[in-house]
Image (cartoon, rainbow, N blue to C red; front, side):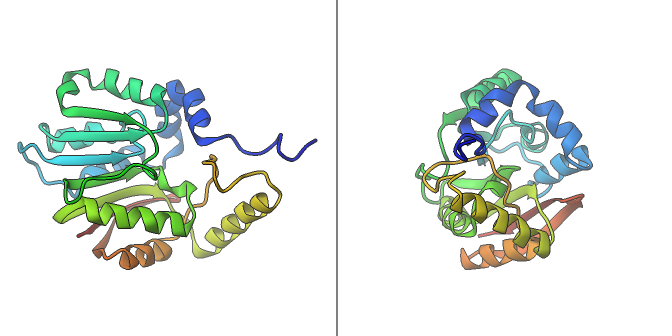
Length: 224
């Protein structure tokens, strides 16, 4: 078999095909699902203000249920590669339609407005990227947050040993031409908490706080 034929699926196609079953999959896959998603909203104090929130890789908006419970008037900009996922999000939160702007595209490529957001959130999305890609994104996030703003991330996290193992596997697939640098493929390259902290420090963030630990899942936030 040609090695190109068995390479991983491209990111957009992967999520387009699984949009209808995504919520059920995450409920089964994420350890302590309720606690995980509730923790994503924990750093946001209860408020009726129209806070501005950018949601990267928003998918079907699982985390928005908990965010709107804390900040019912939040103005949310959601970015995702999959139109099918965005359609499900907009249908799920049609009572909040005037508060949600859904953008189809890659948050790696789009420009963010400077000092625009009170909060930026990413949930189960960034574990597909190499360290240099994540650092560039964290620099963009830092610039897009208002002074004192918070970036909240919930993601797949592993030990440093497993991180090295999965990164080596990715690089092997790259060398075998199963994946190409210029395309986004659905491959897991999760990091350890230690690696995450190091990247945040390089991007200028402070006050790292880990607020949830599950079975290879974590929620943490940092401040500008």
